[in-house]
Length: 308
Ligand code: APR
Image 1 (tube, protein in one colour):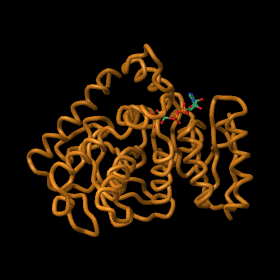
Image 2 (cartoon, rainbow, N blue to C red; image 1 turned 135 degrees about the horizontal axis):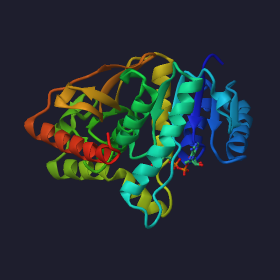
Image 3 (cartoon, rainbow, N blue to C red; image 1 turned 180 degrees about the vertical axis):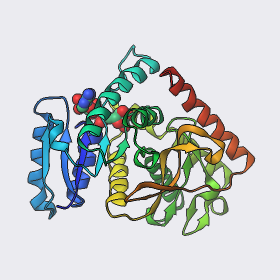
Image 4 (tube, helix red, strand yellow; image 1 turned 30 degrees about the horizontal axis):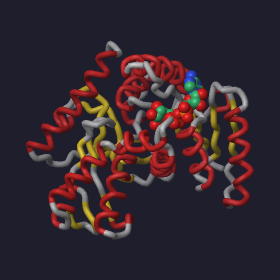
């Protein structure tokens, strides 16, 4: 294969993303974890699936960052899940420590890579990666909006009984319950859903989208979503490796766009070989901007806990 993609963290999301990248033959994949044997076992299992999938991607599981050398893209899913008795801030500090250590290794072995942080709380973790890596903002692109908008697309398709392929959804803001799904910019075959659905149905879709992660956590009992997050990572990796210049909602460092500065927040970006090559600014109505500001405030508060 031409390129190499490393996935740090071989848990649910990391393994699902790695498998998607290998199955689609996008690149060779290195799956790294601190757990001994787990990335090696999962990596070998995925490699053995490749003949059936018709993919010549090589998959290697490892504990050694030297194996990630020269990766074009590095996906970071390493982290801890929130445990009973652990506060949100405890988790924030613990995961920030993990992400800092992981980023140092990523930069050492893949100084030209594009990093896709996935670990939650996503927007704050992007900030840690950006600061620790010293990478330009184009090369730190967080995965959240693709997942959130995919959830919204599923609900729209379900409500209207149309193909998911006809749907398009825009979700802005932080990856949390303050996220801002935008019905006016969400369409079916180019038609805004505000023309197709009544307000109550739209409100229900918006609420369900914002609570999409929590809905799955509740159903699973332990752990959080990983199929859709894994697919979202694969879409971003593909856009970068194929230089597709695809407009996707991602968490990027804003420098005045949307009136927000020095903060990672989800907005539409053009994703290509250079990473987040352009931030797309769309016109917001006053209510939408207020909701985005509120979401940005929630991210700023989290980042503040980290002392940034
Ligand atoms: N270096 C490498 N891997 C690590 C490290 C570290 N320092 N610390 C933890 N890990 C690994 C764990 O060993 C585990 O295999 O990260 C993996 C996390 O996997 P899961 O617990 O299965 O979590 P997952 O469901 O994959 O979610 C990962 O993505 O969507 C977010 O909220 C989610 O923050 C979470 C992350």
